[in-house]
Image (tube, rainbow over all chains, first blue to last red; front, side):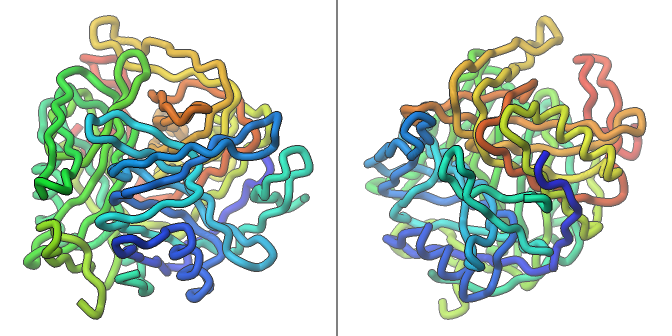
Length: 146
Length: 146
Length: 146
């Protein structure tokens, strides 16, 4: 267990609603920066008309990109915000539902919203800091001893 | 981005446990009304013995109904509460797990709980208001300028 | 509806990051005990290299065990903490994403983390208590009248 400490809610929650056609990873990141939210929990539901999700390939140390080119329900968007180089870094995973109820999911790389994406971010303090993990090249939330 | 403002936790959380056989959309809605919770984040886990989920059909401007007639684990129920005509409107999406671990999911229309559904609602302030989107006919969370 | 009462956030949030190779159910349980967190909401994302999930078999009154022996993205881990015999009992369901984006999920029995699991627990008060349901043998969150 790397980090194991008590954070506190600041009481601040960022409620975001993405517009039709908007790219949510960029839009949420910009809102987090504008509001100086660098640590917290993220959940969202809504719909996407086009999505790119990823599965982390251990051999290649990179995401395998999985395009989803159809209208899907965003069944869950769950993740967190942490600080990387003092900027908020969003880490969210998505489960998407197709027209027959079948599902597909991965690390959210990019998407196009339709008709809405309702996002709730709960801020915590102190800040969560990320550092680059040498084995994977990924920026992971770091512990106090890192 | 339609709404982008800081809400605050009120500190109130509604913890609900649905009984065997109960219809959760109605039961959660009634509890929200009784407790005057009109804005917040919803998460839940449990099991359903029968479920109807939906995928929003852009052409027909209505949900395509997908019945799931088997015992499933409720792997996630994620969503929000907002006010529509001053009454709480629940918007939750479900991912369900079958006996072989395969999954199915959509917008939760109705279900029958078995053996339990453990629901947590975190209230936020100020209120989140919904308005009908003319293109889809759906009630979506509205922004300050709407 | 068994429980239907207003709980309050204590303001405490436990932010946990599991190490590579760690078993998360045990590790999270130990952290909850050390910090005396016996009631709350749990969400997490990350990756597992090996997982065992379960589907509750009504006839056998026990979980059917579903092994997942491949690297998966943890698309969502959603659930709660309640007290059983005065000790924190974790109840979390997982949705996992394979290399092609297909998903599998169930009640989380055990797993091995790789490369990380970022867990956020929000504490609520008063305590949520569990009791054994005679029909299923499962420990479910109990109501005030139970």
